[in-house]
Image (cartoon, rainbow, N blue to C red; front, top):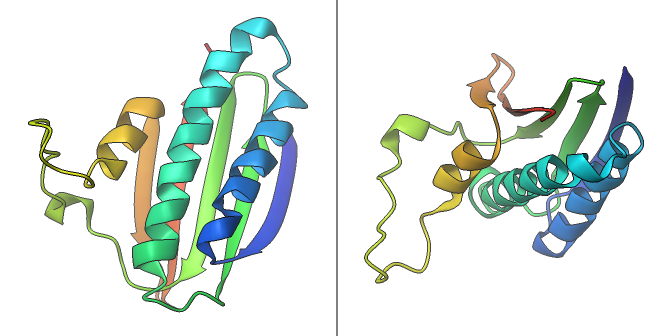
Length: 137
């Protein structure tokens, strides 16, 4: 198993750096042409989760650090975001509007479609965790 960890300031322009960190880490273990689709799907989920953390979870505190951990083995990749902030309640998120009228509100839907499992939690110290699991296809 390969475990990579990095801290990112919660700033919108660093979301692409988070995505790059995950892509390169995945490619260090999953390097077959057939793995590229799974890596791309995980990148999409990471991008959406990072956007939600930065724009909503940090409650406007753009200087707070997000700890991003990638644990990858032959059969599975696990990405964990840990950050201080408000608890995310996925059951409170309305279903996305597919009529073409909405410009946002698709993040959770895209995350769930892109990974095999997603979990949200908050510990007693107020640290929130998002865990994304992608199985290797």
